[in-house]
Length: 57
Image (tube, rainbow, N blue to C red; front, top):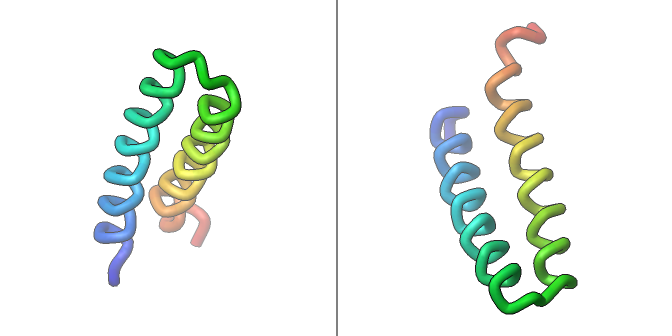
């Protein structure tokens, strides 16, 4: 699996997490909301590390 494929998978997962986070916000489920917030930040970090990989080498 190359970097582009990894990035596309992360984007799909990130979009899914944003949807789950929005649902948690509508139902006022604060625990799930913050859980999805943390997962979203982690996925953002992973996407950034893939994009910046070439710049670091």
